[in-house]
Length: 102
Image (cartoon, rainbow, N blue to C red):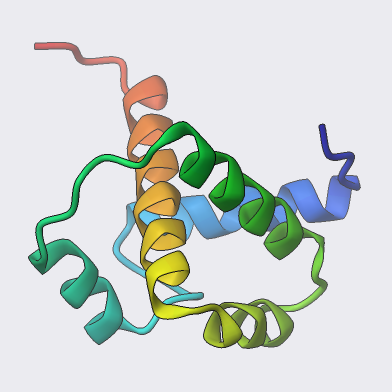
């Protein structure tokens, strides 16, 4: 389990809120489009565990520039998994905050 400061939590909440509105601060839009245009198989448990560590590390960096730099140095496949996981978190956040259920 990772421990984060209140400031880091505020930053994460802001990033998720912005992504929910379509402003993907950390990710290049063309890369996001590419990630969601290709078919991939579901992640294995080991792959998901690896991605979890990258997301945890990502939120420990102060400043969006450092976070972006970290993402840019990831191998393409890992970056794609991080992006998919991030958007899954955004989607779950939207679902949990929504009052309307169909």
